[in-house]
Figure 1 (cartoon, rainbow, N blue to C red):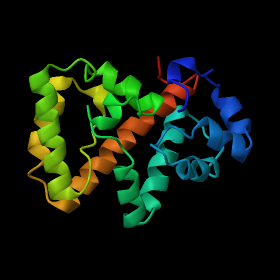
Figure 2: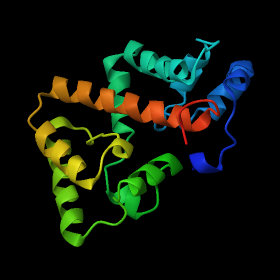
Figure 3: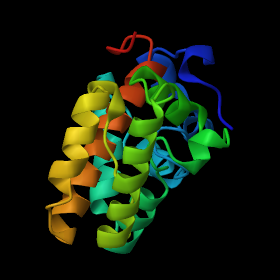
Figure 4: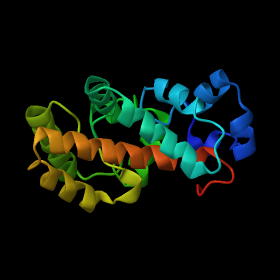
Length: 182
């Protein structure tokens, strides 16, 4: 398990640009779920002029990858309020983010609804429902899942990748001292 963003010493942009490629990859390994290869690709785009440029490098690396690699990235994300959360098997980043939206405090009825939505997603798309929970609350997460179930597989892949880029941006900002992270 990686460290929670709150427990990582935030680096300045200058320090980020000065990291070796291996150190950069290690530092940013948790930006995309179980996919440190994107940190390696982002490292090659230095130097960066802003924290947003770092986040853009992650987005560009994902967009440049093959469709099969993009699907692996989407599938690396845990189900919201799913079995991994119950078993304590989420990455530190995901656990923190799901808790921020109250997904660790669901009523039994809400938990059952997430189970139904997760099952429907896997049945229709063979993917988890991915959303930037830090930019949503419990109600908007439910509403978004119901709405996105009407997507085509292509639309859902694009929606999931868009949400992943939003998640990555916030995680990058959490790691850079002069970024917009708190």
